[in-house]
Length: 253
Image 1 (cartoon, rainbow, N blue to C red):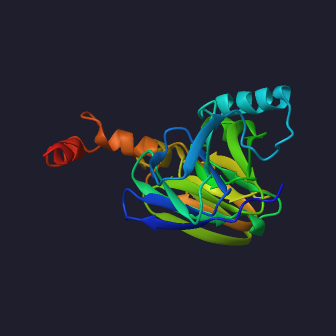
Image 2: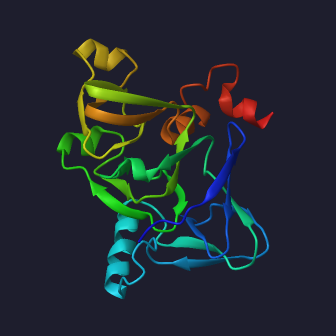
C-alpha cells in the first residue's frame, strides 16, 4: 500500500505542534491522545493496527496490537480522515518538551529503527512494527531495552525526541552515545553497548556505567534530553534539587 501524500507545518520551538493538511479522503495515523485540534470535515476512528494492510484479518490485527503492547505504546491507533471538500487540517502535540522530526521513509528502504516512545504520527500506509534487539547487553543497559519500533513505508513519518536533535551521518564509523539519547537510526546500523571506561570513570565520571555504540554506515539521530533525564532533573530530590531551589521550583514560580 502506497502511503498518502500529506502536507505539514511544525509550530513552536520547545513544545512543538505538528499541523497536517489533508486533501479529501487522505488519512494520517497518530498515537492515541496526540490530537490538539482538527478542522471541520475531518473524522477520526480508533483502530487496531496501523492501517498499512487494509486486508489484514483479525488475527493479524491482534498480533499488531500485541506488538504495540510490548513496546509500551497504546493498544490502538487513531486514524484521521478528511471526509469533506477542499482541504482541512489536524494538529498533534508531543507528550513532553522536545523536537518533532519529519522523516521521509522513502529514503530508507530497509526501514528506520526508533525508540519505543518516539513515534508521533505518519501518513496512512506507514507500517509500525516491533523491532527486537538481539544483543543481550544492549537490551539490558542500552537505555531502550530489547524492544524498539521499526517504521517502513514510502511516505512521511513524524518522530518526537527530547530536547535538541543532532543528526549524524556515519561512514563505516563508530559513535558512542549516552544511553537513552539514541532517538533513531537506519536499519542496518549496529546498536550495542560498551563499558564507559575504567572503574574510576564508571563510578565517579557521571556518565553512567555503559555507553551505547552505533557502528556502520548510515544516519543516526541523537536527542539531548531523553524523557528519563527530564524526569530526574525535575524531581524534588533529583540531580538539580540544590541548584537555586531546583528546576521544579523554577517551573512552578
